[in-house]
Amino acid sequence: MELTGSRIIKASRASVWQALNDPEMLKAAIPGCSEMIRGEDGGFTAVVTQKIGPVKARFKGVVTLSDIVELESYTISGEGKGGAAGFAKGGAKVRLRDVEEGTELSYEVEARVGGKLAQLGSRLVDGFAKKMADKFFSNFQLALEGPDESGEPEEKKKGWLKRLMGGDKEEDAK
Image (tube, rainbow, N blue to C red; front, side, top):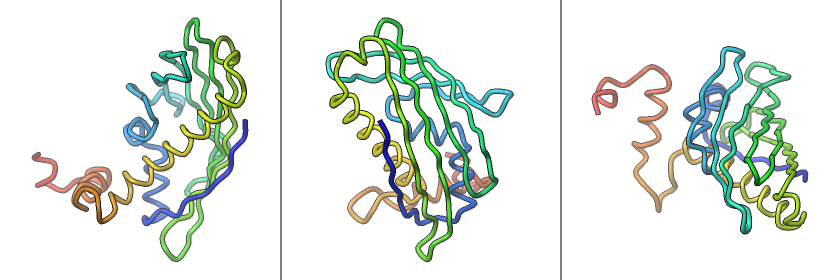
């Protein structure tokens, strides 16, 4: 399964780049992620629980970053094993560029599954993979921009960015 897309994020390229490399940010953006730990090699180990059709699995895996061009692009790849459910492999080529509204984040996602998951049929698996990719990039964008007018207050975004950038004393005290 392959998927491409892009999003305009109302944040500087440096902020988007920093968030793409932050384990807590990635954990918050990945649906079902309960653990994301940076390894010594610059990659991550992760635990993600997902339900695809009738199959629910807890995947433990490794996420690596490669082809890194600071502030411009990288490839993020992951492989997880879900026990009897099978395995999932995937990755995304992520590119950033400045636009008038902030930063354009474009991506090319590729995903594969095996084991019981593969027996579900490509339409179900492809639909699920597209949904998860869309959800990841939506969560990521929301965490950087904050919610729109109908959502929570803008302070939540500012608090996260201030903590990420080194801290607002009042926000750190909470």
